[in-house]
Image 1: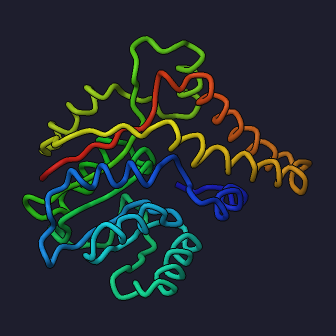
Image 2 (image 1 turned 60 degrees about the vertical axis):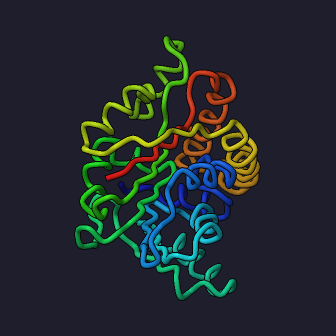
Image 3 (image 1 turned 90 degrees about the vertical axis):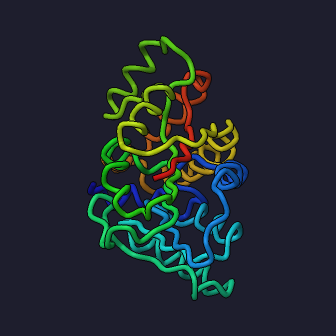
Length: 247
């Protein structure tokens, strides 16, 4: 997926490029059994690597962080160098639907808030072959938390080009992908608002001063503000759910 350079300009300085929380990452990781001593971890759609750093604190196994935007990977590499972790955190610039890895390489595949880019089913199908037999995959994706969401919310998601499924529907897709669903974990509200939208809205206000008169840039800022407002109004109906799965 090709995005305008200004879109990346909005997000490059943010702590997260999507909703998430260290606590939710820890909880989901705690549901994965102890990894083998020679285990390898793959973090797909890592962004600037907040969850990569969390994973590095939770395990001493090597991590390969993948994103298609090199500046995000540069931020991860810089952090790894500063914290003495360059030896076990590697970055690879690649598209998540064309990953340059041989089958059966990884014991754990991790992806937070990124699988929507290619779709839940498509992501599971593309990434499962990279897992060792018995390996684990943990992804978070948007899901309905309540039935019968308002039409305004449905129309917003439709305009975004991605409609959530219920957790039960997503669990069915996990089974059809040939994976065993171990557990689910919902991302708490703070992972959306305090950790993601608050810093993003501050960044938008800052950029409006310098880019607000450029129509294409203003449209991007307007869209991101509308996303935050949609969550504020309708957060009871949807959110992110982590799916912990075994091959």
